[in-house]
Image 1 (cartoon, rainbow, N blue to C red):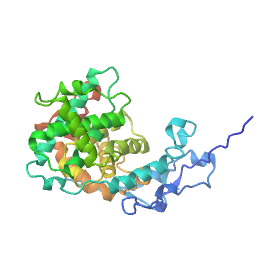
Image 2: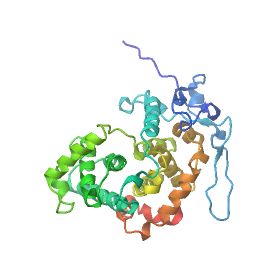
Image 3: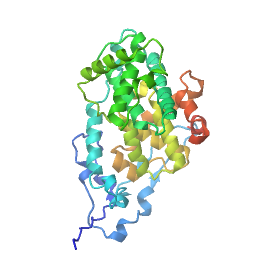
Image 4: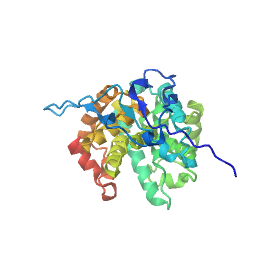
Length: 346
């Protein structure tokens, strides 16, 4: 009989040993492991893990949550040790690499400034179109498309606009080609161009989409693996032990951020995801930041407060804007009508 080595439990790690990834992109932050604790100790998160100082303010300002030195973070991958598909042994290294990519491939601030005619408002309308396209294609097929496909499409669209000039008339064409590329990158079975054209302006032809696909791939040098906020959000939701309500709140905020030019052009994907999960926890009356979140995000809470403040201003305006795709999507019963709650409670 072959005896398999059991993995050493790695649940508790003092926060003081964690270096924020945002400040040190090559720091081996996720390689530091605590291996000197028993299995019983490793299965328990001490009471002081959530020992935080939260100052309340009368005008509902976002307060900074301070994680004290010596607080312990939970190993969120320990429960998945015996699940091969979760790759729990390599998860920390994988996300450390994604953090590096996130910083290396982040968009330049105000990247639309080089465009002559394309404005943030044009971008918002086009991203709104992509959200509708994704929803309509999901209802068209037996197996819905991955949500990651939408994020990847918007990422490709933005990165193309940051390196090539584009006219307002061609924005939908670029968006369709970006969605096609993202579908091929993320999906096992990507949608046919003919199906995509059902929901696009009638002036766009299949040959134009295929030609634009080649132009985009050439402009981006076939580099399509830029990490999206949703990829980080799933990791942070796991670190936060998010329930259905918190998870849906974070999903709405993260998807809504796609339409907000001021967010995607000024903050990295990991920072946006961290702000989304913290807002979701606040709305659900739970601790807005924990030692575990600090460890796995690489961000201290004061790092994300500015992003949270900007996000709150934008989300409160969501019901009043013409770009309603994300808001209406999450106002449906199957999404717990979470957009209504988020916009009134954030």
